[in-house]
Image (cartoon, rainbow, N blue to C red; front, top):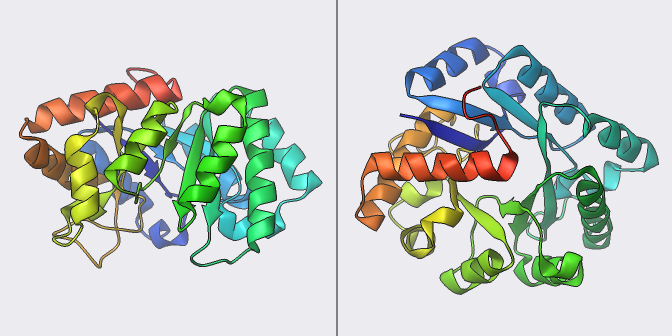
Amino acid sequence: MKIIDSHAHLDMSNFDKDRAQVLDRACGEGISHIITVGIDLPSSLAALELAREHNFIFSTIGYHPHHAKEMGPKEEKALSELALEAKVVAWGEIGLDFFHRHSPPEKQVEVFKRQIELAVDAGLPIIIHDRDAHREVLDILKAGSNGKYRGVIHCFSGDHALAMTFIEMGFYLSIPGIVTYKGAHQVKDVAAKIPIERLLVETDAPFLAPVPFRGKRNESAFVTHTVREIARLRGISFEEVAKQTSENAIRLFNLPVEP
């Protein structure tokens, strides 16, 4: 059974002591592909290095809104060069985070818009981080490319109406381990109702570990718990969710069917 973890951060120091074992466990659980995601230039380089070392790992490039204030012309040029690499399958994680505001909101907006342009020029889908900025993200996306982009809203946190708005714009939505949390009613509702053809699953490892590992370090093997909960919510089989979400990820990121 093939399952794709569409968003992890395998380069982070949380995995430095046992990264090889983490990857072995993922393979043992049937994880066929992992997309490890860049959040700035150093992590984009590290993610690509991991992807080069492992057939089943693919990488992305970009500046997370937390790091938007660090992106300048030099970083932009370096990312554009990395975008040409065969193992780079998306531009992201990019977007807006008005909850933490580690970078000024106006800088986040500027860098988000610029990275969308760069992704379109490179022919790459975008991976969007949207926290406490739903309206602003929507307005930016609607203003460009006739409101149509290839991409995914990572760790989707909105309601069903917002989910359908993004889907109508051409986006996929990615569901993390939060869906297994007892009180995550809104995420459960979205996971149960949106068209399965627009659904991805992810860990966001090392963050957001699902039940029964909540509060511990997350890893790609645990995405099976997310798949199982979505299957329960939708009243379908584990195998059907795994198959469809994998097909969706392969289509969006242009992944090889067999790494």
